[in-house]
Amino acid sequence: MSKAQRKVYEAFRESYRQKIVDKMAIEGKDKSSMLILEGLLKLRQICDSPALLSDNGDYGQDSTKLEELVREIDENAGHHKILIFSQFLKMLDLVRLKLEAMHIPYQYLDGSTTDRMERVQQFQENEQCRVFLMSLKAGGVGLNLTSADYVYLIDPWWNPAVEQQAIDRTHRIGQTQKVFAYKMICKDTVEEKILTLQEKKKDIARDLISTEAGFIKKLTQDDIVGLFS
Image (cartoon, rainbow, N blue to C red; front, top):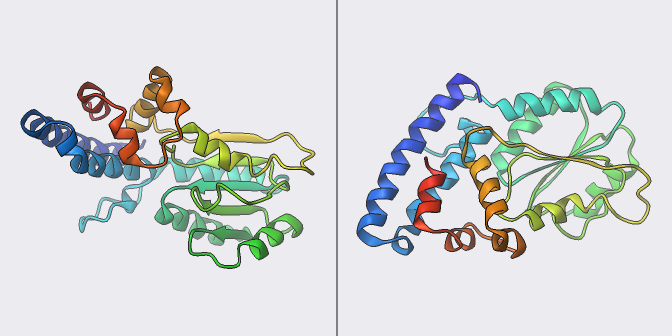
């Protein structure tokens, strides 16, 4: 993260860590789950960009991920087709603005999209359309996107199996290219800690946990405090 983005992250991290520790000490983990989920959501949004925060404050627009993603798109869009997934529609909107400024044609899909197959066909068949942006949940199933050979997961999901479903959109009959998939993780943040927990607790990685609440239930109080440390 940049210094400005890190400053916002650390302020929210410390604030929620203290609130969660105090609440769990009095009421226990289960009765603290809403506060824990709220804190994790805020930190994960900041990892993408403080601009995603729904609070009334102005936390800036800094986004190391967006800068890196734009660099990758600029380097690869001329020779490759690219899928970009995010859980946050506001993050996809930030990417859309960058693509439009760069005059790079793209397709977009989220849960409210009604003409899914038309957009897929445009991406598959139109050589000028180099990028497809989609929400992770909406793009995880039922799509054949074999024209793509680069995949970027902007923010990690709670379970690797859900991410793999998204990547597998490229692995369909007709795929003739090697596919490169990248997961964007901010160093020294809750994102990195979640990956460590997935590795440490194999049942988290094995079970198809589709919600944040399901993820929290698998953790101990020490695990939770560790996410905010």
